[in-house]
Image 1 (cartoon, helix red, strand yellow):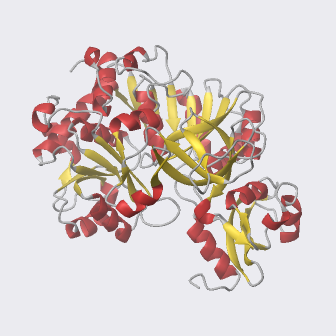
Image 2 (cartoon, helix red, strand yellow; image 1 turned 90 degrees about the horizontal axis):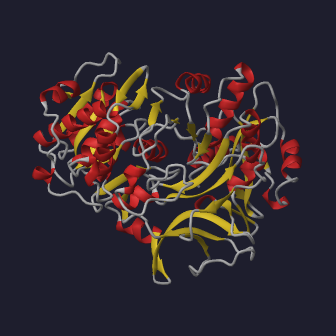
Image 3 (cartoon, rainbow, N blue to C red; image 1 turned 180 degrees about the vertical axis):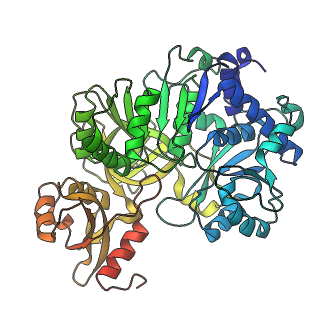
Length: 550
């Protein structure tokens, strides 16, 4: 096909149409190397043909077990091209978690960096469905394991042509996109999207900044191709939604994507912004923003004249950090986005240069499809103060892969519509802004009063001596549970329970104030900054001499 014939919201179609229009532009920059749209298209075609040669067909699942690098885009695009489904694999998983994911996702082929060869060699043979493993050289020094195939050799031997529909049938917007998410509790689960729905809900619908509105017809995507340099820099690993969605949204409009080749490094991030003239930086909550501010204070200022926007997703930003970010980047827009693997982007708090955050975690919904539902699944009245569940209708996932029980609990019907319940509890103010309270699964019940950890965590992190904090409920003979703060102080500082309690009383009700304090060197979070509440509970119980399994 050619770019002029784009007529459906299929992710492979969209990519091919855009890459045909801007073949000479830089698509991906990683670790000093650049890949043009044409080169990325060629390599994705070769990989797609290699996968076909090894028996991968439409509907098959292909595991992507990679750290950041151009190969991640090649794997995604190659799978889309042959109507296969790429499965993101968290490279931090240990053998048991990997085996569960390999089996649950039913992958038939695996693309893995060489540094994971040993782990793959241990786990893959126990999963009979995996017939092919392509190993990507990564400079780790690990040898090519027996039975695994060298990635570059396979690409070199494969055709660069893209006549795929003759082998796998016609593409459509109904082709699937699956994203595995671990959350903060339980084993990973795969969220199943139609590609057309994901294009709009997750990837921006031709409007990556969510400012112009989504396209109405597929061909309009090509009219949205930008005619000026724009560089996006997502800091999260590509194995997570935040990086995949923002990267694809900018590639689908002709922008460039800088990839972080290793672990997050705040100082290296500022230098990369200078070197690559980054236009938009995508972060994940406090876990990235606080180190960025620390690096600025210690080594800055840096040249951020190219930086148009900073967007956060995946975890909310504490108000004090948002305001500090606005201070050091006075000409940059800061957006605190809200959404999940099950919803895509739902809304945001967008701060223009010079604005203040206003304190609480809140967002303005994108359209009328996001509401807060009460216990009867009826939208709460704005300004009523009723606490309900954040819900989304319209373009939502089909459900969880291979898990009808979880699907039934999360995807519900009410008022003649199908809704996805995000697990977030919230109220709606008089102006229709949704005020987030926290995850219902983590709520602490103390004497019949509900305490949402995120609200208390925000209060704690606004204290100048607190570097990071997470909150858990611990047993209380009188009230059932009491609030325990697990706090990592700023280097060289000390904190006391009395001091933090007095501070928190300025912004939260007395029953929400921590009654216990556990001081740690660092708060454990996921690779994208989400709190690990299992770790928090275990840490609190052990420090207080309690049995975490009781």
